[in-house]
Amino acid sequence: MLQEDLADYLHIRQGQLSKIESGKAAPSIDVLILLSERFHKSVDWILRGKVS
Image 1: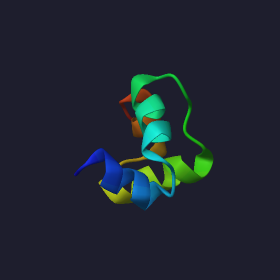
Image 2 (image 1 turned 60 degrees about the vertical axis):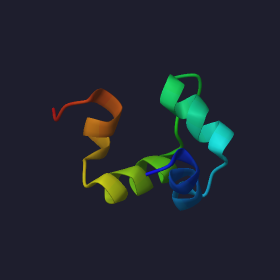
Image 3 (image 1 turned 90 degrees about the vertical axis):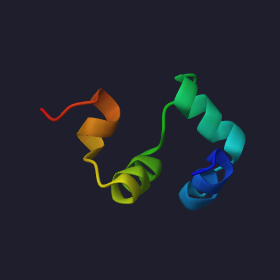
């Protein structure tokens, strides 16, 4: 998936997605939920890389 396509899916700009990916910005709750749904991972896994 291209970064541009994912940004469109998340309803954010590509530049904002780039900042999230690089750790320069935190994703909003809405973005976290959409990422969770898109990649079939828990929000906890997205934030921490593991399930608690």
